[in-house]
Image 1 (cartoon, one colour):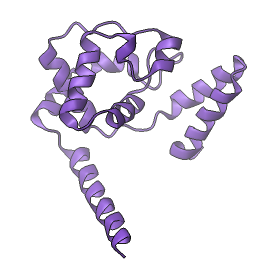
Image 2 (cartoon, helix red, strand yellow):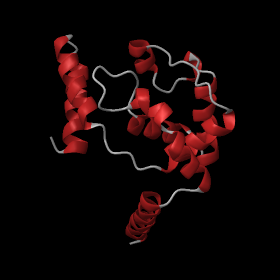
Image 3 (cartoon, one colour):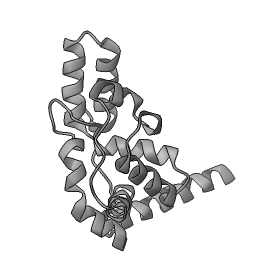
Length: 158
């Protein structure tokens, strides 16, 4: 019974967080949203070929790495200020696409963008996975093509 209460509590809290994030950002997140197009120029999931991993995946990967929002903001902003292979959370993307350039914005702006990335509910990058599966198939990378098709099925119903 206690296990089910924890699950239900998690669903309720998660639903509230989604509702709050879907309609309002913190002051930092709202300012970061205005500056986000700098990031979306490369992290746009509809680019074919991709220039960088979609922000949906960046957010998920960094959230798994970070202890909390403050740590997330520091990690994301720190990487954007001075990208380095040892700081990369997308090792495969760096190998395939190369290391991103440093973003020439003040650290405060990058932290606001990172706060927005933490708070936003990005849509799954369905087009990215479609493009990726086709490209991987062309290159004979069956494992990558299968992974992208699994993601399409799981998150996009395709």
